[in-house]
Image (cartoon, rainbow, N blue to C red; front, side, top):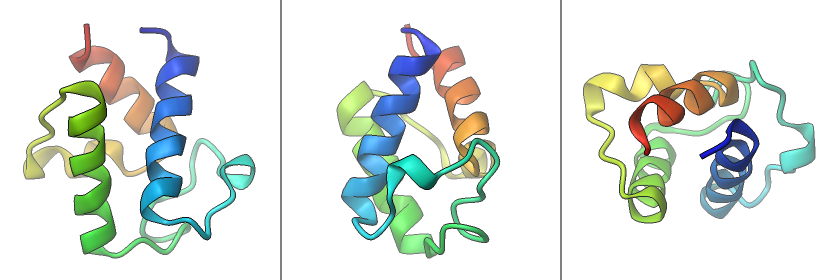
Length: 81
């Protein structure tokens, strides 16, 4: 899966969890909680949505590795065939 596909999927699922976020304004380095205002429940819902969409288990210990769009794309590309 290409990085641009992963990026689109991540942003789609992010907006599903936080519909007030405009995906066009999310930069690669915006932190999900610090910059975009997600709370811990939103992050859990995002992880759950990514699991359903990509069949990807993201353990809680790895949540910090998907804290930004850029980090998430890198993490997902390593773990999805």
